[in-house]
Image 1 (spheres, helix red, strand yellow):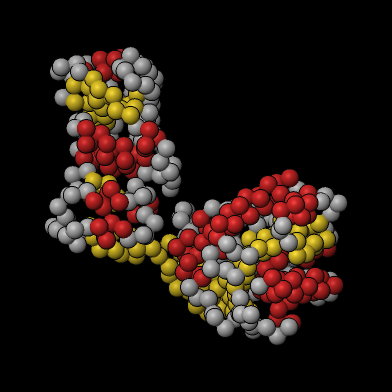
Image 2: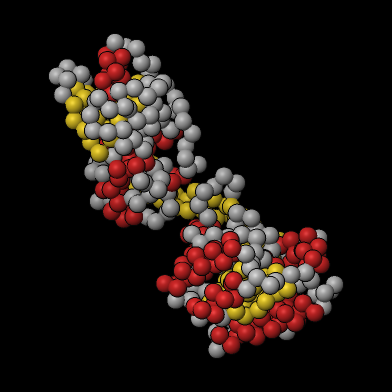
Length: 121
Length: 282
């Protein structure tokens, strides 16, 4: 299964980025093979508006089935729902490896509503 | 010379006296038997009506066209999402629209190769109009919580009467609402106060206006011994058309929602002179 982890830098050893829409990097990890590839999100990071929507589009295009992150706003949530992507929630910053290990152990709660205010309206 | 020019009254910084200048310019022009139309483009907080006291007899909804996708025709090609500058449409399994982010440009409908996108209006506010004596007032009123004012400002300006001198009371700031207001004006009057913030934001406003190529002039409001605004204007070839003195009685009259000329008749001269200076530069 492919999961997208919001990350502050290029590897799973780096701390995760708690924001979904304006995450610095998405690391696409394959839970079976352990393979992890970083995808820069700079373009959305600096978007004037709709960053979360674009980020949802990005992770959907990458083929992620689940997103592991700290917070998701209302529009990103709607877009992820539409794409059928689940959201696994991390409560505090930790390395990507740790978030992934807890996800595999079913220790991360699944988000069933947005947990962050929109930044535009 | 155009007998019916459009003059935008703007500032950059808020609270410098845009509305004071605009309503008194309207009143001074009325004394000269000129026909004036006052268009309040400060749609987040229209306040010219507090002084001009129009009888509003028309309220029309104003909206922006937002996309509606016909799922039966859509092929999920994604061209609509790619062309949207505002991230208001995203391609997930199907196109997903976010009307609150849409600026109504219509690009998505234009690029759709199968005609699956039609546009429907989304209300963002109202345009109110009415008369105050011989003066016509048009004002926009943006719905509370609505983030996007330029389409409503354009709807206000679309009511411009070509047979009246138009006064556009601009919103504060120098971003899109300001640019939308001053576009198409024959002259921009910038109201500045003699303070560090006043000069800072005046400079921003001038820098925004220069590429638009609109003639501009400055009114220094609450003028005192601080000459920083006048010095800047002199050094940069920007005409200072009036210096309105700092006078507590002006603030008192304004706070009561009254025009100045009854109580302070000498102020009529300030605004008649200001208009004469504007006419010289048109």
